[in-house]
Structure formats: C-alpha cells, structure tokens
Image (cartoon, rainbow, N blue to C red):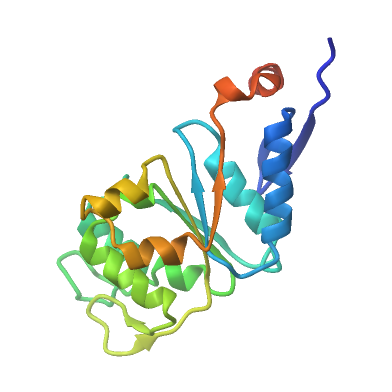
Length: 201
C-alpha cells in the first residue's frame, strides 16, 4: 500500500507529514501562526517539537525576521540568564565586551525556548515579566531594554504536575499555554515512520 505523504521544509529542516494526526497538527500550526499568541508545544522526546516550532515561525507574520532558539536544559542557570538577557562589559569575570541577549536578537521575530520545564523558578519570574511587556536590564546594565518577541516554548514534561509540585509557576504556565499543540509519539503515527526513515537516508 502506498502511503501518501508530504515533505515540507521549515528554516532549512525537512519535515514529513504522512499521518492524519500530523496533518491535523500542521493545520493547527497554519491557523495559529499568524497570531501573536504564545504557543506551548508538548510531546515526548524525539517527536518533532522543534520542527513544529520552526513551522510556526515559517507561517507567521514575523517569518522575515529573526528566528532564535535555545535549549533551556543545555545551559547552567547563570549562563542561561546571560544568554537570554545579555550582559554589559565587566558584568562578571570574563565579560570583556557587551553582548546582546537572545531576546534582543529575536526582536520582532520568534524566540523558541526548548525544554522550558527545566527553567528554575527565579528565571521563570524574569520570563513572566517580559511576557507582561516589562523592560529589563542586561546583566550589569543601567539602561532598560524593550523587545517585541513572539515566544514559542516546548517541553516533554507534564507542566501541570510541575505546577502542582511547586516546580513551575502557575501564572507562567497559563501565559505560555495561550495555545497548546500536542505532538503525538511515533507509535501513534505509523504512517510517518517509513517516510521519516527515507528522509534520514
């Protein structure tokens, strides 16, 4: 039996949509992308959450502007803060020059925060303030920075459980989850497996 599938490319990454459930996901992406709503993408590791995030930027009104992404679990807390918010020369040992943060680099574009569930509570507060359009300081800075960024996040964790356990702020969860897109695991997408295998060859 021939399985009809569709291959698309988002920001240089090829994606295959063969199963009905993934076609539904793509249809939702195309519907919500032109809005400025924050989007939370959930699903197990390896399901393609980053591809969906790239698709949101691809179909958004910000597609001609910057796409910036970072894995929150890949950086220690202190490095993540300086990466997100930037720093001024002399802000800490080794800060030999000023550096804009990822929020600044993504201004008027899209910032994708992967593994958002690993963000510590202090950083969650800072992120919430930015979502409230509050200007912020670079580390060591004296001049506030204002940005216009569309935020897309992803997690393989159950954030509702994290909220109940006190590991994730309830107010931040609701702000991030204006729109939620759930990416089903491959075991529920049998029609995607062969096209994906062919794509990786």
